[in-house]
Image (cartoon, rainbow, N blue to C red; front, side):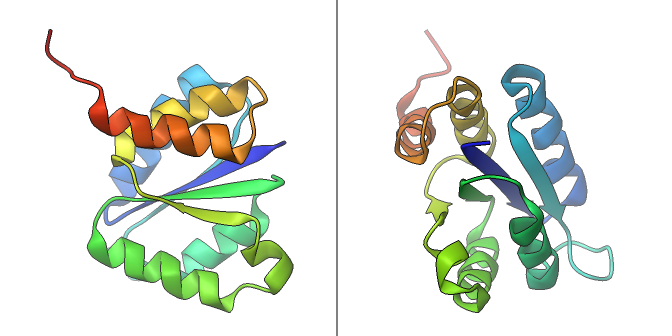
Length: 130
């Protein structure tokens, strides 16, 4: 798989629900949901994020984060990875649901990480109202 995605949310339900939504349109893109803290509450769990990143079968990995401390957890995990894996992991600055959805659809076409990142970031400017 060219591009895989890890969706990191403070809420297990939000992470899993977003993965479900992306999977419906993106088919066989490698996806992982990481939500909540280690005790099952609201928050993030760097160990779970790291396990998801290391377990994903993809050449390039995109990390989507919902809120600020999820970004900090993802950055912490990035520092813990070996250099080879670290060079293939990208933090995505995009709306969580819309960005993951757009990137997933593009990834399902076999696109590379750069195209998926562009799709995710463009999701920020797509108007919902017409």
